[in-house]
Length: 434
RNA sequence: GCCGGGGUAGCUCAGCUAGGUAGAGCGCCGGGCUGUUAACCCGGUGGUCGGGGGUUCAAGUCCCCUCCCCGGCGCCA
Image (cartoon, rainbow, N blue to C red):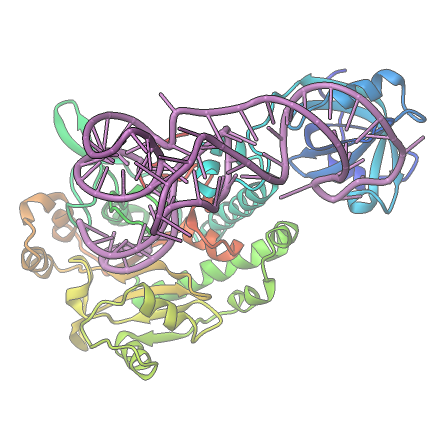
């Protein structure tokens, strides 16, 4: 049989009973009742039951059906039939069947531990659950790109190999760059800032690497980082951009990936409010008051931990902003609020349902001397940031930007309880295989 | 880095407190079955008990060392 001119399982489900159909895919379930064999076929669009029986199929087809082990690749042809006993109500009664790749005993049978499934991740990604997540992820990637195109942003490609840290030195992966020390990037921000002086509004979607030895459900060592930076924009404009972006992507997933969300048993009612903006905004000091009211012992100036974030997210059914953090809690490049110089023009966007921070952004310090001073105050060396300081020497401009953790958004939208399933091959906890 | 849990059959686990010579379910193999839905029924197969050392007549079980894994915190997106 040639390997073209086939129907997807989705197409077959929509065909008239009695039509002929040709399908190809992998054996998802196999039930041999002796004189009747049921195969549930899986392709990228879904599943479809195939039936080979003594009565209705040639003997060699029944024999082949009997041999087709779980995960064997097959091509098959037959007549479409409606039958309430078939999963999804439609099945294909076979008169042709060819095993393309006979599978050995498949290492995943059901009931395996998380650890084991990570060892066989290259096979586990075939699961319907992970397939659904990857399709949702794809829809979000498309939505990000379309959103920024519509808003007049240029997509740029910053380097992954860099010389210095953005946030600090301890969390970088070191690389031997022909005898010099180099690092895998942990943020494209500084490079995006350089690009706004010509393109004005830029964005990128690229991996970031962080060697923080985090053992939580929200951390990856390698994650996809959506970052944007725009000239002539303050914190308020930036927050509007962020909420529009998040609302747009959630809306697109709700429009296009309902089947996948349903397979993942995601409660879409809880996602629906996030399609409407604006999102609530609370200042850091208000957040502290809310937490105190909820019985949490936290004082102005303390950083919020995972527990504090989770308690706050219970107050809202949409993502919400926390703004105006004490300056000393934030990075050197963030601009102090002129109204209140102890606070940074910085914001986090927290996703509801206990997910927590998915975006961090700020207005950047655009004054040369203030920036140098901020670098020094944090014990960093301005010498290491000369090219970055140049951006303030030659036509400095007010500007703002943000970074969004793609896997965290996928996790929230798809309703996952752990970030590992938001990416095909997660890198975390010293796991590098497969 | 810190706190907690765990490594026994291909997989998921029981057995350890009170040492006595290794178990279950699933899988796999063989057989049966004309509508299965993680099919079912019958039979069979399956282990250097993470590694090293010690105590003992005897160690999966007690002691010491060591390696690995998981849940969470901190840090962050």
